[in-house]
Image (cartoon, rainbow, N blue to C red; front, side, top):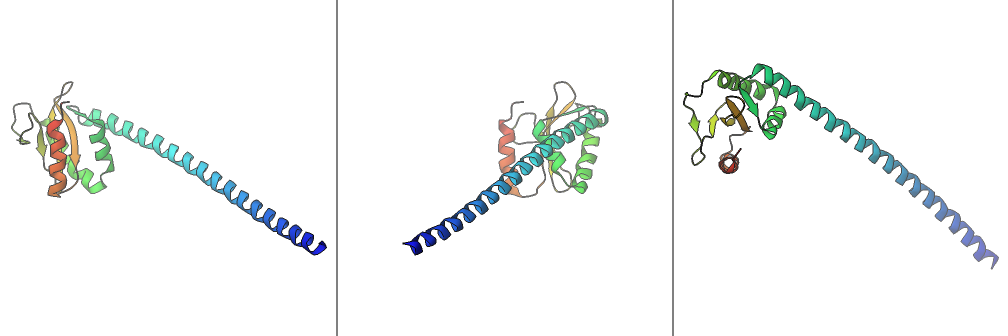
Amino acid sequence: MEQALDDLLRENAKLKEEKDRAKEELENALRKLQLLELELEQYKKSQNSKTEIYKEIFGVVLDNITWEEKALEEFIRLDADRKKEFLKELLLLNMKDLGESFENIKDAKNVFKLKPRGGRIYFTYGKEKRWHIIGLLDAEDDKHKSRFVEVLKEWKG
């Protein structure tokens, strides 16, 4: 009986150690989760401030162009070389008048496209300013382009 009691006490101590170790691992995991949530929150804040910075700069530099929020986010995600290419096209568009002709999207009324190297800029007439950017495509993949254009055809502004 004494032997069984000793065995139970040892087993109990072993289980207590395992419980304590599991509790400590859980607490560590919860701390890591809290840190990751904090980092995510800070990233979202920086992304929002980045968007606001781009809006402000483009409001000054591209004074005849407004942006859909999603299009601006697509621009921000471009790599530096692509941004340069797209920005060149946007600067040219900014100087163009309403009477100029552009390549338009088939079956989409008043939706036009520019073709910077390796991508597309889709735009229409603006309400407040001359032009309104409704989407950017950073791909030459025909299947991706056709899906993107289908969404643009339904765009009403």
